[in-house]
Length: 257
Image (tube, rainbow, N blue to C red; front, side, top):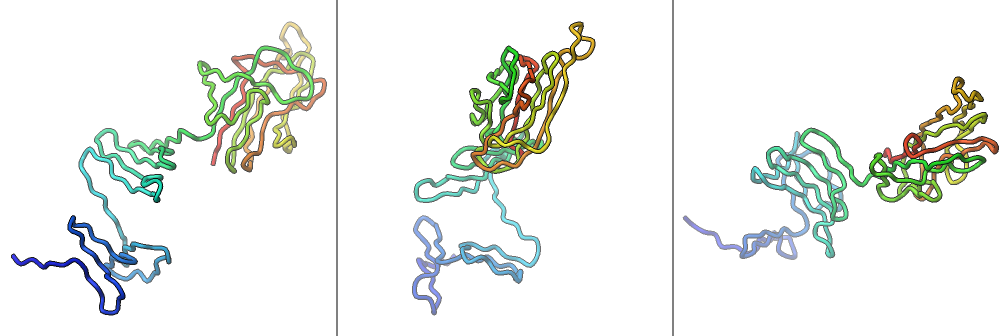
């Protein structure tokens, strides 16, 4: 068998080597790698350093072992895997994961479940008491045993407001009890301004509970928020009483997208 000994390949019109073969077998291609099966008629973007082209379906395959992680890394001089898309081939544990800033941000399981563990979300419970007047509805408790959570800590248990970490559409909901004899008028508030419309209810006056002495009022809204906007539910009636407790009174929300 004959062996052709080469270290560099250079086009006659090039000013430097086009291809360099190192002793460890690694190959360096100067400027851009273009693998062409047939012309697509398209033009690669100016920043492309590798192009794989055909005039029909085109695929790039990453092949590994039956219990391996196959990955494409995105990095820079300070971090060689700052971003990553990887696939686990282990039988029974197959999944695709997307890493950003060196941490998994989204995972797709073998059954198609999409898991986004860092999506802003919260569920807060009310305290014990009756409150009157125009104010933000009070939900001071994050009770894990009752499903309470505050992913990202974007909900403030002192101001009873949520602060949007990023721009997007958010869904919020609440549930409280109206207190005897009074009417409630509750609306969502963005940065202190009322949304269009609201939620109203009148409490009954029968102490024997025959006419909704403590009726429940709840509502759900979807809103567009900019980063750093605040949202809360506001009780707009100066005379209205509402009642909260740690079981049935909740305020919740999450980033939809």
